[in-house]
Length: 167
Length: 168
Image (tube, rainbow over the protein chains, first blue to last red):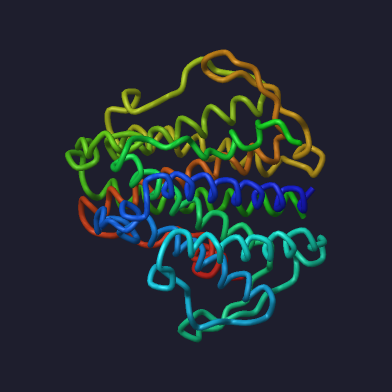
């Protein structure tokens, strides 16, 4: 069951990311780079989405045994279209990684260094949950930013995802 | 290990809820009841916490086989102190429920009705994950609201919980 639980939240993660990305895209590139407020972790929609991408990317690299010192962010992407291209590639790599995991892999202790060089070691399953939870935090900010811009976006509540008919 | 995964997730959930609740409670009654705008899911910090509590309560009932027709919310709690007292009890019940789970329970389909009466069926494991994810969404809003009221609160990420609290 643990593999199903982990794969389930990752399918949810890709679904939720894409839904909010598409909401931001529909507002146009100009709106996506507009400063919405310093109370948010990142002040623009593009910056927030780029941060989710950057965190997802750095964690995947760590799971594969590297510890990058650079976290990708807003300034690495000229537009949402640029970001989408890189994100599609990353998502395919993530999907291959998550699909390949067995129960033994989930228990494996992952040693990595943060971007400032501090060492950590945690079981992989905890980190797989962390990345999804991290994105939910920032997707919530995006939802509020979209609400401030044009009105409330469609919900990305996890139960809605699980209630969808599965093809 | 799926049971461990869920139990640790609830350890995180309880830690994160309390971490933000304590900071909010310190801001005082006037701040937590201040209307901060209609762009939030709930316009006050107290209302947001009451909603996280209400959803947790509702889902625990559904897992135990009853589908309440009403969700508890802001108006049910005059103060943060009132909410805290109810939440402490709920947390104990939630922990007992999660501690009592076995691997087979997680695959069990839960049949429930939402507050409008529509029927659904979802496996217990994913619903347990849903409740924590739901709270993370609203904790993010609370974090931004606290930032507006007094400055940015500390991180409530899972990685922080593991390294600072569980240590391993």
